[in-house]
Each structure stands twice: as C-alpha cells, then as structure tokens.
Length: 366
Ligand SMILES: NC(=O)c1ccc[n+]([C@@H]2O[C@H](COP(=O)([O-])OP(=O)(O)OC[C@H]3O[C@@H](n4cnc5c(N)ncnc54)[C@H](OP(=O)(O)O)[C@@H]3O)[C@@H](O)[C@H]2O)c1
Image (cartoon, rainbow, N blue to C red; front, side, top):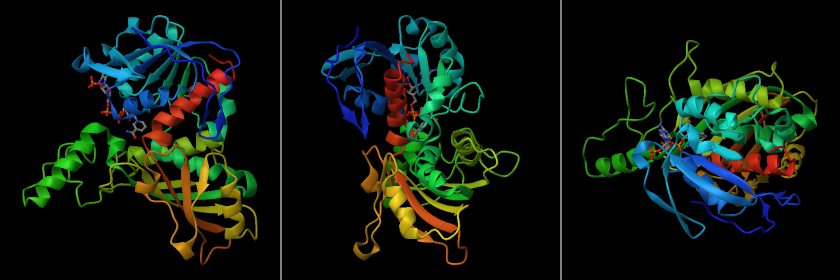
C-alpha cells in the first residue's frame, strides 16, 4: 500500500519548501482517524515534501477502515512495532501511552518521530519545536521531536518577535479553548448537549473537563475553568504545560509565566488574552503592532475603527497565528495586552507538526 505524490515545489504558510535533495520519504501517521491525524493527512495531500509511501495507523478499533488520500484508497492498519519498518518520518497523535510505547519502536527502526502528545515534551534530550521560534533546536534531535501543546504554540509564536525586540519580563495568559482540543469525542459531546438543551432535555456530560477526572460538566452554553486534571499546586496540567513549555521553547527558564485555561463551547480555534511586561522602557502599542506585523507566521488584525480583530471562526482552517486588540496597560508603562487566536488543529497541532517535518527535510536532518 502507499501513495505516490508528485514532486511539485510548494510554498506553505510562508515557508518556501526546498526540495533540492529530491529524496522521497516513507511516512506513517499514527492516530490517522483522530481530529489531529485527519488534519495531518489533509496537509500531506498538499505535498509539503515528496512522499513515497504513506501508512495510516490507528488502534485495532479502526483497523481495516478505508480512507481516500490524494485520490488513492488506503487501508488503516493497527499500529504495532513492525508498522515502522522502512518509515522515515512517523507522526504521532494517538495519546501519550501510545507514544510512550511506539515512539521508541519507530526510532529503533530508523524513523524520526514527530510527537504531538505531551509524553516527551519536557524530556531534556527532546527538542520541543515551533519552527518560527526555535527551528535550530531540531539540529539536536536524537530521533524524537516534540510538538508543543496547542495553546502554547500560538502564544510563543506571538511572543517570539516581541521578546527579540523588547525582552520579556512577565507573561500572564487566560485561554478560551475550543472543544476540538479534546478530540473528536468532545466535539460530538458539544453537538449532542446543544441539541439536548435546545430540546429541553438534560445534557449528558461524559468527557469534559477531563475524561479521566471524577466529575463531568456540560460544555454547551457553558465555560469550564478546568482543562485536564489538577496538579498539586492548584494549576491544571494544561496550565502547567503552558508554563513549562513556554520557558523551554523560549530558552528562558527565569521567565515568569502564569496561565488560566478555560474551555468554551467553540468547535475550533483557541483564543488567548495575553498580558506581557517588556524589559525595554518607553515602547508604544504602535511599535508593538509593527513588530508583530513583521513576525514570522503572524497576521496582525487590529483596527478598532473598523472593529477588526481575530475570532475563533475567522481563524478556522488557517495556518497562521492571528493577533489583535494590542493595547498598553492603563497603569503599567511596560505592560501590554494582546488577543491571540489560531486554529488549534492546524498551527496548534497538525500544521506545526508538518512544518517540523518540512524543516527536518530542508535541513537534511532526516
Ligand atoms: N486536538 C488538539 O487540538 C490537539 C492538539 C495538540 C496535541 N493533541 C494531542 O494529540 C493526540 C490526539 O488528539 P486528537 O484530538 O486527535 O484525539 P482523537 O480525536 O480522540 O483521536 C485519537 C486517535 O488515536 C488513535 N488511538 C487511540 N488509541 C490507540 C492505540 N492504542 N493505538 C493506536 N492508535 C490509537 C485513535 O484511533 P481509533 O480510531 O482506532 O480509536 C484516533 O485515531 C492527543 O495526545 C492530544 O493530546 C491534540
């Protein structure tokens, strides 16, 4: 099985793809039936690099199902260690326990694993990469590259040009996150609960705020100040991911970061209200906007005279990170507020993952 994708140079998301080495890659997608896996497959259909063979992997449940990719019907297989024989690049988005077990099997067989789960992110030997921010970290890879948490990716993409220009002293973020961040089952739950409530029925809650936690609350017409389970310090795991991953990606362990993560009844795209304090004196909001406008992978949508700002709906199906509502804090000269929005399934997951693979190909690291 496999697909042949023709060698057509492409320009994706501002990155010119250099295919001068003319190599063809055997690629595996683990979690091919999931919310992220489906998006990875769509992006591979855009031919980001030359693919010789594409293998779609899932659990036993979906093995045998068919998916049509670039006009070719492929059969989904159960992911087992032998699935990774002759694979060059393996994309993992099937949960941490699957990555724990199968990423080493893929690496042992010579593949580079680009992992979307949180399992390897804070491992000091694993680069945690947002290509616009720390692409050079890929050069240190030993077979595994981790893709950061969705809410972290869009925030650090916006912070990077500001940090380079003015230095960052503090980051405080509140998120407004979409249900697709919790997978396809959470999207179904929002649909079903919305129908139930509109029919005056009791909403059934089984997944959110965290599938593994004791209590579940309806997400329809609601806002849940819990994403993932709580940790001992009173923050949730999602909040701690944002805090720890931001420091690692920005290579600034002493950067104060605090996060409050909230789930909203929105299907796609996470929004974030980000407060920053910069090191430099006398910076204006206009300067900040100009810097953001020139930032890699960032689109500034900020004009209050025309009510222009990004929203989850306007960012859906787009690869960039959108920033608006840039304001100086009324009381703190070095403080600024930003509104950062991006498609969590694309830049927050699948697109960042594919961008990592493009960088690995361009840098001849695979
Ligand atoms: N959604 C996001 O915005 C986002 C962002 C960044 C990272 N992530 C991470 O990416 C991972 C997947 O997220 P998702 O939202 O795509 O979840 P999802 O929609 O629930 O999909 C889960 C996928 O994993 C597969 N799977 C489950 N158990 C498996 C097993 N034992 N062996 C092989 N495959 C197995 C499922 O296959 P079956 O069809 O066989 O069940 C399905 O393809 C999670 O670790 C998540 O934290 C998600």
